[in-house]
Length: 296
Image 1 (cartoon, rainbow, N blue to C red):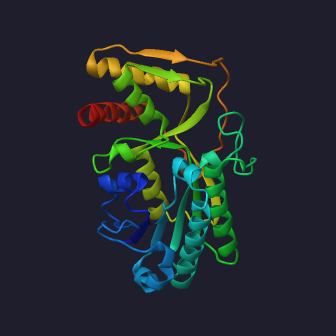
Image 2: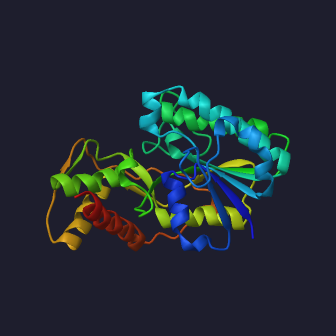
């Protein structure tokens, strides 16, 4: 049974992994910089605890500030880079495989043009740069090591989890739209033609599971998505589910919209997934019901 250390173990994505039963064949340890957490570790001095990691087969690197945190304190990028470098050293010392969770937000034309792993990077956005700089560190550290890591550039992961404080979740489009529907009985979409790759939470967990169990470790960057929607489509989908659950209508206000072709994002062959709209419905329904129960 593989042992996996999850770095950033009290964050949103980690909470999704923790909440899924499909990973019961793997043993996860959720490590956090929060002192009150069960498995606290000082990531700034992580090298002092390096012997702790020798029991692990994988490290899933989820640690890093979100967009709002970076905008408030740009120095967090440098801190993340330092920690990422130390994590790579630990992996090399103990032959631990690394899975780094990046984002399609790194692309300059994400949702605007065709995208592949060699597409232009958005260096003007601090959140995108934080991921891109971490990726560069990983690529450099493992340049002479084979089959040691995978970098997954994910689309927009969404889904409710009872183990995570919904008030701590920011910069998540579907969650924000659901909250607006419940609080204001309307959703305002500033740019309806923007397109995003959306990934339901249980699909995200399956992606992590597949990477570990199939040992997809090609020392490369891989794009991973599930389904492309524009923001108009997502808002109307939430409206449809809201009506079904609560038997009430909400208003949708769409700005700056024109019908354009879906932009291709080239997904790595290991992660071709059969689309099922019911999986999208399930996640949105859970978000709406649990937000209603816990926030309103």
